[in-house]
Image (cartoon, rainbow, N blue to C red):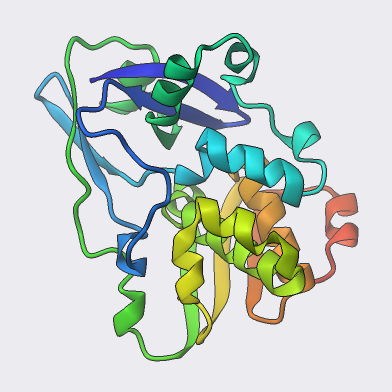
Length: 249
């Protein structure tokens, strides 16, 4: 396996892995338990870390979000965007089989500097492992998510699905296009839950722009999602424009 492309969004790097033996199919979840499962990433048979895929970055979903999320073209331009226009259908299908991950560089770390500079000879990615979020065995009620910095990344796909679920609820005409990408939403897996995200980051650049704007939408447009945010660097304008976010110190 090898990295297909690496691009930077603020302090976040998007890494897409190519040459998948079993092509990855974006968000064709059969159960909510598949959310939050992790992959073991190993470099040169020495260093292993666990990462959760950022499936919301799949090209099919980005195309969908262009129709659902205001200003997505301004907020986010994927690294593959220029190339996609000149790709053959076969190459495009291969591109859609890449597994996307979000990675933050830790300069003194033993894995991310080598991964992001491609300074390795062998890379191995395991099958998905772990029990995931176990939503079907969770009692109905409020779910509190506590995350700091990169700890938000494993919940990016959950936030993406919650966002699309809210869109379907407010605009039923979007249902067919959304279910084509995320059929698990047809099972209404989040109907018995509300979510409160307790998030601490250094700056808003630590949050992927798509995820940030989906969180803002959920806080503003729904009664089932709340955010308490601790952020070291944030403008007064952002605070004023988002009174539905509970800022804390």
